[in-house]
Image 1 (cartoon, rainbow, N blue to C red):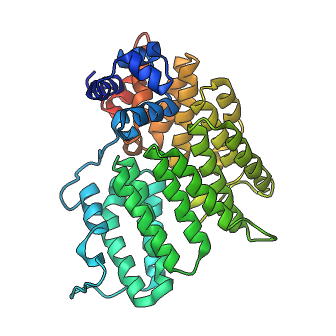
Image 2 (image 1 turned 30 degrees about the vertical axis):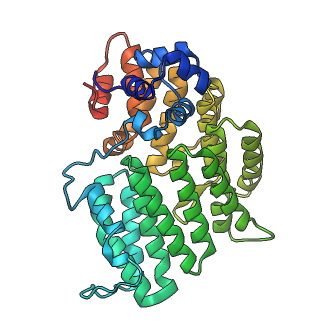
Length: 393
């Protein structure tokens, strides 16, 4: 199998002129485990990937081989099409271009944005990539025509672009999209929309391996909307989701005290969600989200039994499709750490069934599939299908 995470790690290590022992001394990861990764006999956790990437001076996406894998992507489609829409000359300050299309009504634009979110949560990344360039252009026209009222759909168009670009491995362009979304929301009149874009920015920074920045952005965004009295439930959804974003960054950095603080507050807020999780402002929060985040934290910290215990409190009906897929990857990580190969394949298959298109864009999915392939004595039909989706040869 060519171009595995082990081979990419070896290449990056040699580019820095480091031996396995030298990398171990700087990263705090044992030389024996680094050797196992490079030999294809060890599967690193996300925390280990971030630590190794930080020491080697590369983005985690390079080690995970996160890149665009959209079908039928061309110059005007896929990441290039989204890039051209994000960074087009029409958005340059002080310049005016003639021939702009008339602004569509905000209500129609909101419907178009909702369709984009449906594509995203269903894992239809190619369809989202096709829709985003005109959606971004329409959002800009709406702000010019309607002012603050047009900022909300524009901010969400940028948010969708950031989310898509993270999956396609262009974290720098994703950060540009998230920051444009923050600026658009700031120009609007909805502080919860602005706070939500703070959560998106934190998520992008997490994928860049900038864990301290990711935690700070989410924490500050949460502080700005911290409830000081009775607030609507959607306010609590956004606030709680920001606490979980900060906890995710702290967990990936191994900062246990910070994780405990964020999770204690989030758990208290979740007690008010008696009807289950809510999905407001294109974000999610409630008891299941808290349990899902706990699963992630335990898996990242290498506490596999705790991860599988927390996973039992996650209710499938509370999660949107790709959230369920991401949760299954955490279960697969914990199961593989415990050498439960069958359970690993089960979880990977569940993630695959959410959306093969989404799954093949997940670096962790491909890494875990490789681990399952190497651990399974005789490859099953499902494992062969998973390997094909992951692009393993």
